Image 1 (cartoon, rainbow, N blue to C red):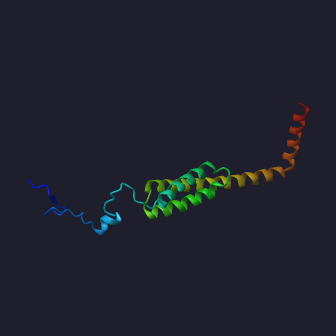
Image 2 (cartoon, rainbow, N blue to C red; image 1 turned 60 degrees about the horizontal axis):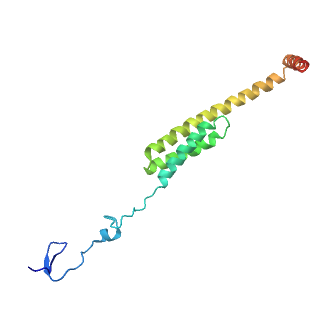
Image 3 (cartoon, helix red, strand yellow; image 1 turned 60 degrees about the vertical axis):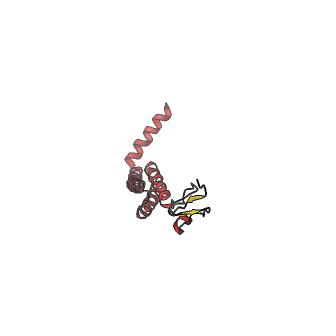
Length: 144
């Protein structure tokens, strides 16, 4: 029995000799197969933008009464649109867009509401009848 026969990767047998397998260019640069188990680097910037968009959208809803929610909402809309156009993190991008739009709308409504409240208070404070009643109430409180 001859133990010097080795099977080549291409199926040919040669006596007494073994040569290393021939790799293609795709196999050597790792695009087809990664023999060492490392993970190839991927572009995660669009996915990160989607997550930041969602976070800023949520912050815009939370901070809509303060007025800064408009800024968070607009940035969330922009980042959500960019990440959606890149095609990564589609669901998170849509979530960022929706929360950004809702937060921006709520913030604008709250800003308009506070402006009208300020105008109403200002007009009320200039009314002489109101001021007389207000001073009477304040005097009765001071007597207690």
